[in-house]
Image (cartoon, rainbow, N blue to C red; front, side, top):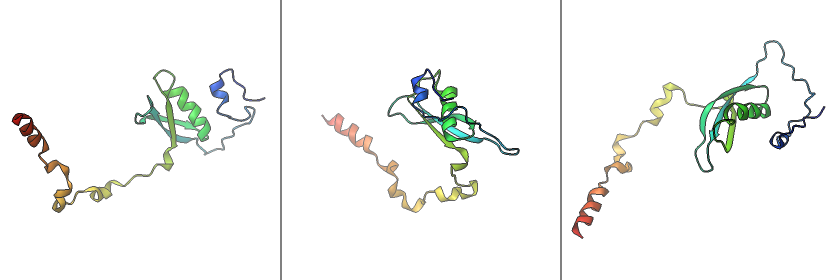
Length: 122
């Protein structure tokens, strides 16, 4: 039995043979995939939730069905949660700014005052 669907979008995914049995061994769980959604081209992808699936291709199908059916969507990213890397909470000091180098911070410039002064002089 092939995986022919009446929906051409599903056929584009090339999911393989639908008669292939996915066997989950005892103690084995499906992976958790984080889903990122893009509403329009050029916009940022936003995290919208997660899905459980045995492989990335099926996770993409599940994500499309769960997060792209009702809300406007032009693209989805699906990433296995275990593949996301993050710093530990104890490492937050790595992101602290060096207060002795405040010349690197652009907030010290008073450009608006100069612009307003220039506008008033005209």
